Image (cartoon, rainbow over all chains, first blue to last red; front, top):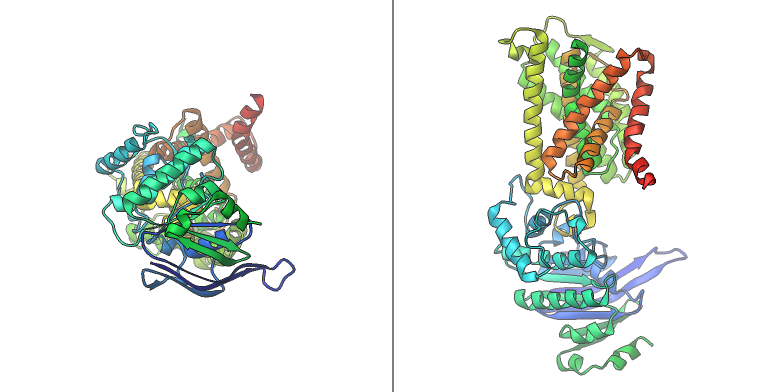
Length: 255
Length: 288
C-alpha cells in the first residue's frame, strides 16, 4: 500500500516565480490498484510522481510504502519498491551498455551491485526468452548496444526491465510509476507500449500510477482515475464510476 | 633503436595513467585535472618510502591509496559540495603541490643504489630487459583486472552512471558515491604510473606531474580513434587500445625528438598532437 499524507511542495518559495506544485495532497493506493492521474499542464501530476519516486524532496507531509516511512529516503533507496518508466523513451536505458547489460542492472534494481559477473549463460537465456515473447525480433541481439534501438523499442524494453527483479525470484511491494510513457511515440507504437504495459501489470500484479494526457488511455486503462488541478486532487473515481465515464465527461474536467 | 625501446617502456609506465583517464573521462565524462597532482603524489610516496627501504608491495599499495584518496576528495568536492568537476580537480591538484613538497621534504629525491620493482626480474640480464619484463607483466595484470571489474555488476553500474544517470539512480545506485569511488580508482591508477615512472627514471621530482593529464587524454583519444574505426565494442579490447595509445603517444614524441625538434618545444608538440587527434573525428564528419 502507498500512503501520501498531506504532501506539499512549493518551488522557488518567496520569489516572484513561486509555484505551488502540491498542496496538502493525501492519497492512499492499495496494492494491485492501477491509478490513472489526469490534469492540465502544471496541475502537479508529475510533481506527485516525482515526490513518490524521491527525485524531489517534499516540503511537508509523509510518504509510506507498505508501512515503511520513506519520506527521507533518496530516489536510489526507493528503487527497492519502485520501478519507473520515463516520459523520454531513452531515459530508462543506458545507450552504451548492451541490451543484456541493461537487463542485468534492471534485475538488480532491488539489490546491491557487487563484484560478480552476472551476465552469464543462465541470465542470457532468461532475457532471451523474455525478449522472444515480446516479438520485436530482439531475442538474438542481446550484445547490441541499447543506443542502436529506436525510442519505441527502448521504451518496450524499459517496461520488461521493470519486472526483471521478479523474474529473479524477488518479491514484495511491486510499484510501477509511468509518467506519460508514450508522449514521445507515434500512435501505433504508443498503443503497442500500453498494451504491453497492461499485460505486464496484470501478469505480475503490479501497483501502478499512470500519468497521462491522453483521455482515451485514461479511460481504457486502470481501475481508478484521479484528476488534479493547481496542486490539489479534485476528483477520485474508482470501479464502476470510472468504467462509466465518457470522453466528454473527462474532457469537461479540463474546462 | 634503443631510443624507441625506451619510449615503449615509458608508454607502458604511463598505461596505468591512461586507464585512469579512461575511467574519469570516458566512463564518467569528468575531465579530471587532479591527475597532475596524484601522479606526482604516487611518485613522491614511492621515492620517500623507497629511501626508507620499505618493502615493494607496501610501497605499491601506499602509492595506489594515496592517489585514490586524492581522487576521492575531488569526488566529494564535486558531488557533495556541488563544485564544478574541473574546478574541484584544479583545487585538489593545487593543494597536492604543497602536500607533495611537504612529503618529499625537497623538490627532488634521487634513487641511487636502491633496489626497484625491476630488481624483481633480477634473473634476467640487462636493465632494459628487466624493466620490459616487469612492465609488461604489470600492465597485463592491470588490463585483466580492469577488464574484469568493468564486466562485474558493479562495473556495469559504474559505466551506466556516466552514461545515463537518471536511469541508474532509478535502478538503485547512489551515483554520487559511485563518482567518488570512480575518481578514487582513476587517481589510484594514475598514482601507480607515478610509482612506475619514478622507478624507471630513478628519481621523483615535484614537477614531474605538470601537464601529465594531457598524456592520458591523448592516449585515450588514440585508443578511441581505433575503436571507432574498427567498431570495437568489447570493453577489454578498448582498454587494450588505450594501453596501445599510451605507447603510440610516446613513440610519436620520441620520433619528434629524433627528427630534431627542440626539447623546449615538446609540450607544444604534445598539445598540437592531441588537438589533431581530438579533431580527427570532426574533420571527417565535415567532409561528408
